[in-house]
Image: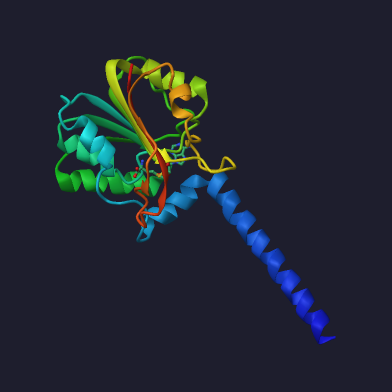
Amino acid sequence: MLKRILKITALVLVLLLILAGAGIYYVGVHHREIWFNWVYRNPGGFNKEPNSLLVQTVSNVSPGKALDIAMGEGRNAVWLATKGWDVTGFDVSNEGLRQAEEKAAKAGVAIHAINAKSEDFDYGSEWWDLIVLSYAFTPIPDTDYVERLRNSLKPGGLLVYEHYQQMAIDIVPGAMHAGEAPKIFSNFKILKFEEPVTGGDWANRITFPLVRLVATR
Ligand SMILES: C[S@@+](CC[C@H](N)C(=O)[O-])C[C@H]1O[C@@H](n2cnc3c(N)ncnc32)[C@H](O)[C@@H]1O
């Protein structure tokens, strides 16, 4: 009898765990703004410093118009603005946008912070000197989307991309599998492409394969 009760209890616990996991996954995928609002309101999340690939890439580039896609709490957008860039950043997380504006005000710079989805944003045509995709949740690897990005970049403009590599099943939005980036970005001229296994920018710096890409139109 006791064995049976234990078995049923274990089964119920496993079912509850599966349900909780599915719930978290559902919220994560379908309501990312809820998840990221929570992330940005709590300690952890992303490194507060700007992305190092971005810093290396643009340090000697004359500032112009920059777009930070899914900019989160603005660590990259605000850094760019302090370097003289005219920065537009968008995201679905209101808390991220609020913190980005607060950070910009503290740094004494202005940024254009917009609540928008990467799928719907009007990227324009030849508008940007720089596009930043730093762990950005986007429709990449959709090549039509990548073509929209290319169209929106001025000739000679730069695109800087860093993200974790895609998992065995495609659960990381905006991520690419190992070796895929040159094909997906084949409509760009690729200036740098590497896939180091290192700590990414998520605050706990888990060691994981990354994709780093710098490209121009
Ligand atoms: C992994 S964080 C990266 C934040 C920032 N780019 C950085 O490097 O610190 C991903 C961001 O994408 C945003 N996001 C999720 N889905 C989005 C979507 N469909 N459109 C725009 N932003 C989205 C989240 O709110 C979050 O701020």
